[in-house]
Length: 598
Image (cartoon, rainbow, N blue to C red; front, side, top):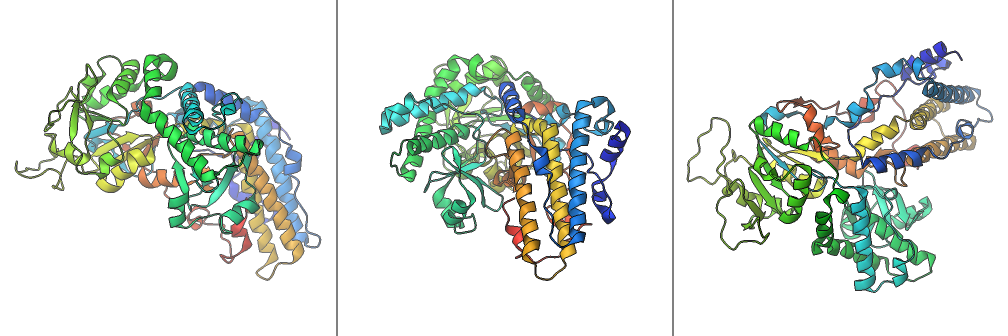
């Protein structure tokens, strides 16, 4: 195929695929996402990991044939040829960038990684108060932090819970390529699970081995799902970035016992690992080590101060609300912003105890002595700029500030600001930015109607990897195979399927599943995308869309936008008929195709 023909092939629309029995090619896909990533080192290592092993494209582009149905075989043959041509074309363009005209229309990956993405309409001009979390929001960490937490928790397991001392010398280490955010651990069996938005277990790992589908079906009542009551009892969500160390230690502990045939109670092991991680956080031990060596553990944030300054200059109030102690926040902010960091903030609250900060209504504030770090005994009736406070709750915060609703609304001095519908801290005019969906954002959105913005660094490196040649080929191959299955079923009509009919479909679905496994491998971890649980949106992605108005890779992304910028969401299409529209299917909801493990 000539270069000109390849350019034409990539320019054809997806709708032309196998249209009216002719050959066609899949158009280039522009992947939308958000910016950011893990540390540069981790991103690079993931990329190397993802491209290390070569894939046998010939085996995955060879499709089955029907013994008797020539019309069906025409579709299969055309799909097979289209897939191979697509693969050759993408590889050719990857090796010859000068002929890739289509890339001129793509958004540069750097812009996608540095973008702020909207799930709903947000007018920053109407936001008068902006709150920020600290950990993994205002500051981010090098991989050394999760390694430190893992090592400290492992030591606690051995020394406090009397786990085998061999665990300390057997080479157990935090693995940044095993865990992702948004997983859950099953207390009954110790499995680490990736849940879909319907709460089905899409993938589960017992130790460092993937649980086969038959065991999944047997464990979860033949449907890979638990009832709401069972979920509350059995599943412990692992939603923030800190929990990646938790997840890895859980899997390594289970694998250690399995490898040595050591009998153990999964529920006890889960509770012990979770307790060791919690104890590591509560003790403040790792906080002290990080504060002593900020350069080792904190990443530099060259744009943070400019973002905060721009917000202040536009007249917005800034609230600092963190669950970490003041002396630790002070060490981190001094490193990323400078010694005068508190001058930018109207209110500084540390050791806030989120999410209880939002849900409880009788937690008074205490003032922190900024010189000694000790908590003062005196009653706090007013929050002053330049001082630091601890504990508290949103109701008390509303009582202790003198702000008023910014519009022309007069308020009687005797009125309680908390009870007033125009209270300045119970409206969408307040935006809170944080990384933990359930500690930072869910209650702020659900209980008080705040505008919420999530920091999700994973979108940065996922966007980068999804632009790689191998991922593009896998993505397009899956689309072509699924479209071929739809066309194949049309040739079979609406009657009962013969054994040969179903065998072809089963083989095609297994090929789709192999391509999905390839996508997971390319993403560099055993669970795949944070935002997808195999072929459906993950529970994490569902929660992100439901509770977060905006999301971005890092706070620095806000520097690209005016303080009065208006964000417009992408098309909120959720149902198949809205997305595909012109390619309907006619099949019963109980059709086996709806229950395949693709």
